[in-house]
Amino acid sequence: MKNENEVVGMKEMIQKAKPLWQSKKMKLSEFRKLELFEQHELLAKAYDERRDDVYSKKFALEEQREALMMFISYAQDKELRLEKKLKLDKQIEKYDAIKRKIYIEKIEPHEVAAKQIIKNMAKEVEEKYGISVEREERSHYPGGGVGIARYNKIAVTISVPGYCQKTVQGREFQFRDSYSSKNDDYRHYIRDTFVEDVQVDLPKVKFKVKIRGDYGGAWTENFDVELKRSDGAKKKSGDEIRKIALQKAGEILYGIIEMQQEAGISESQRPYVGYHTVEYGDPIFSKQITANGDAGLTADYIVVSSDCKFAVFIVQEMIDHRIESGVQMRWTAYRVTLDGKMAEVAEGHSYERGELGAAISFAGVSDDGIALQTREGIVLVRES
Image 1 (cartoon, rainbow, N blue to C red):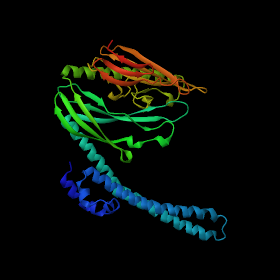
Image 2: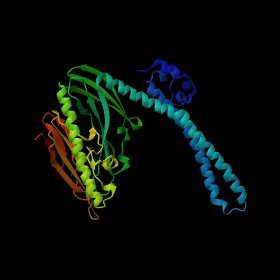
Image 3: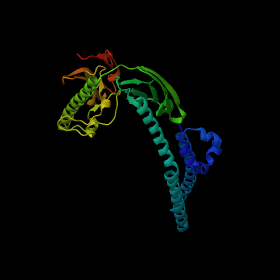
Image 4: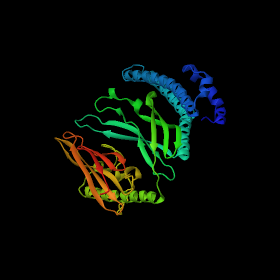
């Protein structure tokens, strides 16, 4: 909802951005009906078009300078040409300064304001309804020297006092193709999310998530979630098992990294903890790793069972590299229980130019256990 005082406070800026409704064929009355963050975004876009005009002029001057430079060393009037070049240099510097000024004074404030308003809207929904939305991304390398495919989706977490926290996922969309950039569709790259039409009738919660992608992409996900009652002891167990799993993950990674350091393996080949298929995310060695096994991981890398009695995490590591078959990756899934016992529950490995599809990823959580997607199919992990 727009804050009317903020809208009035923008009046002067709106009037100065007169190319907006002229170029977009938008009436001022229509502009005022937009949400406040949309007004900021359109103003930023209008000023960005003005900056593009400056860039076009600068580019034309640079072409002139390039053409001039081709003949300076051969020309009889070398000094005259050098003088012209210096004048062009000054003009180009002038346009560069104008471009920077337009961005700093006109574009950036609106971009920052729009992002902050969207962030505040999300915070308001989370505080009022306990609903938060995150973007999840995974990558997949099919091998054979092609590119890496990229996918994304939303994960919505509902946290209501007195009920178990629940996370549900939206549809997954591919936005980057492995084989050709012509097949890329960044309209499905999730840029912003907005929770709307929330209806709370505990234990049921209904809502919609409006999603904006790049290049005008937009779609809506509908959710109808039923929560289960919980108690304080269960929440404490969830926090406890997550802490134990983080410590165990750190111990494993620290051990692998220590071994690889002794073997002289480069940092680019160090292990990762992740939950995406072939995810090349932040390497664990870049975090704070200490001898006590604290790897500085976050809870996002740990999946806890619905009864909070065990957790699962996945370690990804490069274990070989051969000329004829390429890199060999290994994925290992571990289960950790409240008593600190740990066991390997799934393992897969493959060469990039040979056997494919060995990556392990999380497929979901139910009352029956934690589901893993493996090359052989779905593996359901239980407490024992």
